[in-house]
Image 1: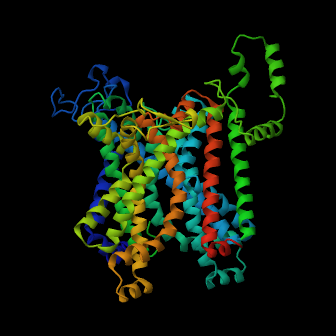
Image 2 (image 1 turned 135 degrees about the horizontal axis):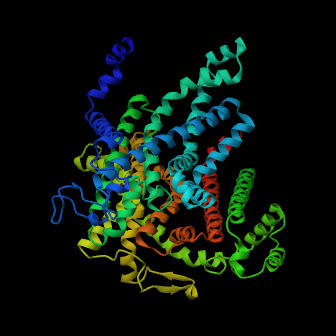
Image 3 (image 1 turned 90 degrees about the vertical axis):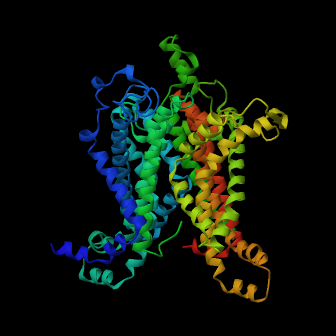
Length: 305
Length: 327
């Protein structure tokens, strides 16, 4: 109760409520996330269940256009799945991968950043050079190569079964340097402060100082990049799915829905591609706008890219 | 300065070594060259002989050494699918990708400089606000979606521009080694949509970067002095202010080249543009691991070369870099 009243009177909430962009994007985001995770309940059909799918319904246009069917509000895809249901399930897959990959890369990045920043010297220059090199290759390239290696190494069928954990690993491994750099920079600043000296004098070990004393003070920038990073991970996943290195068509994410629809796009069946595409853009714009606001609020001088 | 260059070059060599090791490991672990060469219908004995002859029973490091030796002479092995040297295939596809990247870079430079300066000088005008808002949305649209939208508008509905391929009217340059689409209307019209989609993801980034740098420079003392001297606004903006925003822009540009090459894979897939990215995806679908690892090594080389060159040039221009990296 006390934390709640503290939160209610905080400047954070005050400026959040008074910023229409932040409020709007957060609202859209909440609606999308809730709808995506409620998809087994609110979706009209279950796209994972082949029994509910009839191939005769394939490529039905949206219900309001000519030839549309009242049962399928946004039409159906090439396999006869209801687009609206598939989109809801797909959004859930995209969001899970986005969050999972962000979590993984934050974990890797924080561990490496803390180690590099705290110990310095050789370890620092080795780890940071590695991060630089990987970053110079662009995260997409690394993700594409990792995805290609995983797919060749495990074979197509096994890849499809474990697609979600694979994609989380691939994207997580590809984008950790951003976190490592940020954490290292704030560790370097924190390390010189007196409370760290004091902790050393008391005789605490480096692990305890790193995790219990320094880490909590470096979390603000981590939080700031995390929001934007979720958007970037969702985009990476969509890109990987689009070139066939992501989610299989049987359990589509938004990216693989767009890919599946692209084959029929030129022959005039625009709805299979366009609805998932629009949803993807709305999702990413909402996250980016909210992340931008959070960044400006928490740390107006962090960086402007 | 000399020490700085030596250090950067050594680092580049180490990175190249690691990349070649990864590339070779992929080739080594997946795919069997004997089966690709001889097919299924030979006896186990012949197979063993062939293995010995090709040196496939040697330890990993010896084979990697041989791979390196070949790579230094420009030989990255044979493609399993095409039955031709992988290097030859990559070099045959490279011009298409380079033309695409070049056209996209031209679009980025031509548009981002004036827009960046305009939004920095007049931040509160309605047009600047619209442009900045559009840039947030632009960053959020995946490049393949932009491509699909462009196709639907300009190819399907308006039927102005072709939706795939490079066209038939390519002009051979350098004795046929470079098929160029720059000199005919057919080639250019095929280039327009792919290069716009490729540039769409970088453009907002560069606009924001130039705007931020420009804003910072406009606050500085020497700009005030130039104005106080009574120089014309144009001269102050383009000669005094813009020059000093260029350095960070060039550095970021060098780094973004890598990102561009990654995005060519997506753009080339949508437009079936016969470049390196499209070739890589085809190799992936055909499980042509030899060609895949050759692409990895080749693209890795391009990245390392460009990044090292940018770093060295930057070190030449800005002495601070040399000192801060010396730790």
